[in-house]
Length: 430
Image 1 (cartoon, rainbow, N blue to C red):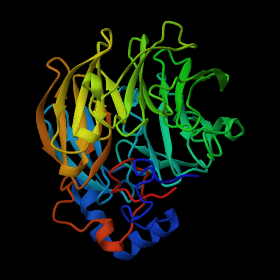
Image 2: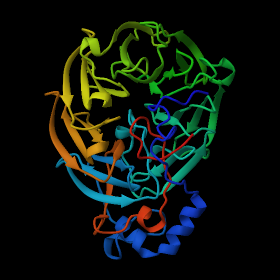
Image 3: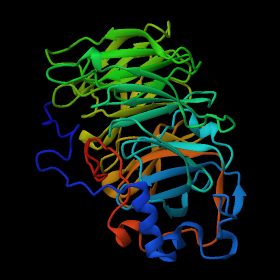
C-alpha cells in the first residue's frame, strides 16, 4: 500500500511523530497513580463537583446548548456555551476525538446520560454528555473511523477504513438491552481498491434526513456507496467519474438537511475538489457539478457542513486556511472565509444558528453566523483543537477547569489518541 500521501498518512516518512497509545487498563492504572491531581480539573475537589458514584458529577444540570471541542494537544475537552460563546469548562478525559458524530447528535443529546459518539484509538466510543464517562466501546479493526448517528438516535453507522474496509451498525438506544452492540456488519474488502489497496477504503459517512440511507465515499474504490440502514446492506454503488485524468478519490461527504443535495470532498490531484450531487432519488445520487480552485474553491477540501436552510455549504479547505462557502443551487463558490490557520471540521450548535470551526494551528474556534455567512467571533480553547460536536445540556460544577492544572499527558506522557488527516497532532497510526 502506498503511504506517500501526507494528508492520509501524516505520520509516515518523517511526519509528525505519534504519541504512544494508551490502553484503557493502563489509563485507569495511570490515573490512580497520579491521584487527585489528574481529576481535580475534571470534576472539582469536593463541593458540587463530587462524583455521585453513578458516573455523573453531582453538579447542576444546565439546559444550555453546549459545544464540545476536543483538544488533540493535551487530551482535554473545552465546553463552550453557545449563548455567550465562552469556555465554561475544560476537562481532561484521557482521550481525544477528531471526527465525533455531529450531524444529528446535537439535537438528540438532550439528557446528561445521552451519548456523544467519538472516534478514539482503534474504534468508536460513546461517552455520557454530562460526565464524559465512557458508556460503550467498540473496536472496528481499523485506526481510521468515522461514525454518524441516525436521525432517530437509535443507531450509529460506522465507516472503518483500511485495513478493515468495513461498515458497522451499532445500537445507540440507551434504553436498549443491546446498547453499544454491533447489530449489522458489511465486509467490503472483497471489493478491492485502486492500485495495491486491499479494499475500497470507506471514508466518512453521512445520513439522509429521512434516516433510510447512509452515504459513504470510498477513497480507494472511487465509488459512492449508498447503504440501506434498516436492512444494513448496500443499496446502490455509483462510480465517481475522474476529471483531469486523476483518480477522483472521494473521501468525505455531507447530506443537506432538506435531503435534496449531497456534498462530497475529493482528495484528487494536489489541491482536491468538491462535487455537488442531486438526491431527488435518495437511493441513486447523481453528480451535478464539481468545483476546483480554478472555480474559486479553497485548496485541500476535507469535510463540509451545510447551512440550516440547505442553500449554502461550508467546505473546510485547510490547504488555504479558510472555509469555502458554496451556493448549492448555483453550483458555485459564493465566498471564502479566512481563518488564519488550518481547520479540518466544524459543527453546528443544536439550533443550527452558528457553525463552530476549531482552528487547530491557532488554538481557537472560529464562529460563523448562519444568516450573515461570516465569522463573528473567535474563542480561545485548548491546544490543537480538531473535533467538535454539541449537546443541549451539560453538567456544571465548581472549579470545572483544567487551567493551571497538569493534564494527563503531562502526568503520564500518554492519552488515547485519534486519527487525523493533514496536520496531525493527534498522533494515531493505522
